Length: 343
Image 1 (cartoon, helix red, strand yellow):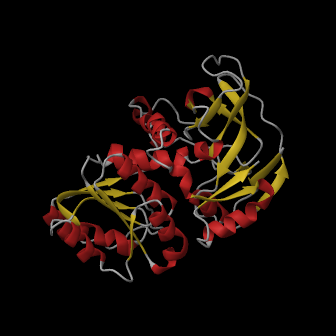
Image 2: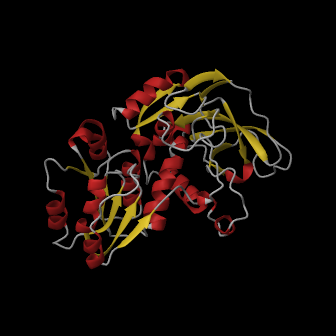
């Protein structure tokens, strides 16, 4: 089967190769991939900036149909439409796994970097990580469940969004926009999405099309803007989704006292300058987030299927797998928000 493979360590080394079709083992199913999104992780692997075990098929944001099942599977049937949690190879024995936090197990190797992923016609998967999607939900909507579940887990579950909250999202990339949509679906009274001039053409434009309050920080003083809209109090919740050290340092100033910061963006730096004392005097909470919890998946599926969270609106390109290079280039140049590759 034609597959997009990171063949060896180093910058580059991604090729379309003919790989063997997977055979399900005990407790596993084979899924025919219908749609799979390009993630920032895939770009990091391209540039040798993320852990991976080559040769490995890339891709982990996908939807598809169960077409085969191995021995010991009894919860899913062939023909069922599914999406999948990317928590394969979790050990099942450490304190994190036993507490239900398999998504941050140190032994986890997820599809697309630790084991073969979904930029291929077929992928084999542990049945225990599957979730059904309803018949009226498109496969493109299914392909954005994984990144949307990150936003739901981080904003609603980890940062404890409350109805009526005033929310500021820093960074209008795919995760930033999904975080804003999650906040709105969770009952936020207003969601402000902040970006830079480079975000104007695609990202901020899409934020406005989604009905979000989009701010270009080169044209508007964000701090004054938020204070004016909150009677000088500040935001209840700030979501840092840009990975910008400058944006991270701004978060305490945007907050009200006893507000909350939800950290999603990774800076690429080992450390960043942060106004520690200003955060202390705000008595704020800072929550760092990584990956998705089981609890966020069905919640996200229901929000997307019910129309409360139009996550597929971040999709800007649908390309055949053979055009993967164009998809990577458009994503990296920020001319695309979310690119789906169709095997």
